[in-house]
Length: 257
Image (cartoon, rainbow, N blue to C red):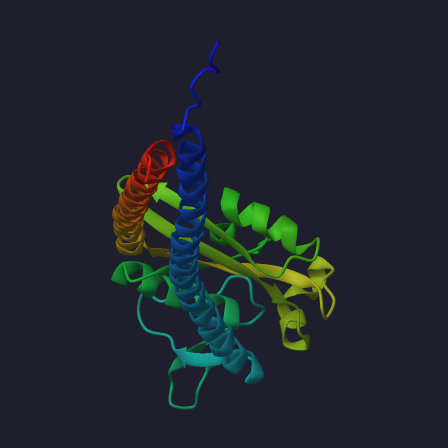
């Protein structure tokens, strides 16, 4: 009884599968790295924008605090800060001036920023003197994390069809802050509160989505092209080897005479 015919395709099938797996892993790693780097670059840009806004506000507050607040002319309809002791002064010219301390100045600037819709920011604390400065849920969680040593908190939130980026970092008590907040038990170096930044990033989210779709499309086309080329090369090689084997078989059973 003759032995059963061997399956000549089995080694080729395994070879093609192994080569295919190597190509899939290589291309997946390549395009995965491209996607991750692209996403990180966009995230870094958004975070840098938020940090720049936060630092600008802190610098403005520091300028105000170095002068012990800034007096402005009290015009009709302007209310004095009810959380300051003797905020108004009368000048020899008969005009009245009221004190804008860093907290009040920050809140008034935030109202201007909110009306412009470019970005919004909010100064807040777990123990605010002004009820208008009470934190929302994001800000409260961030303030609690600052007490544990965290230096910044980042989040995204969806409101309707728009995605907003939220960033918050702490405000540290300095000597100039104690004039208003010493009665609350704060000391220099304590976390007084924080400033949260919020702005629209829907355009950037759409850009990330387009990048993801484009990278996915390029990945699919590249993978299909490589696998197709490998398949054709292996098929051609298999055909040539089969022809060579047939030639050898014929030579082995044929009398050279």
